[in-house]
Image (cartoon, rainbow, N blue to C red; front, top):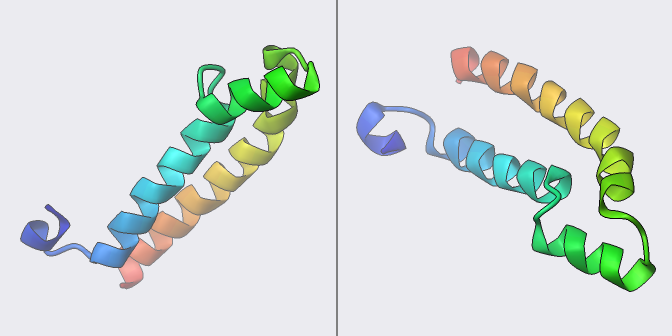
Length: 73
């Protein structure tokens, strides 16, 4: 779809990959979240709340960079 629209394929692929990693780290129903909480005995919402500042900071930073690179590249 990116090729048909004439958009930078690497930029679109990295946005999709980054979005999936963001969802994996900030979702309470993610398999990695459930496994890490089950093995450590941590509450799931405590784990999500500890991950959220890092994931939101990364998401905000990449959002700005995708906007900039979208116009530059």
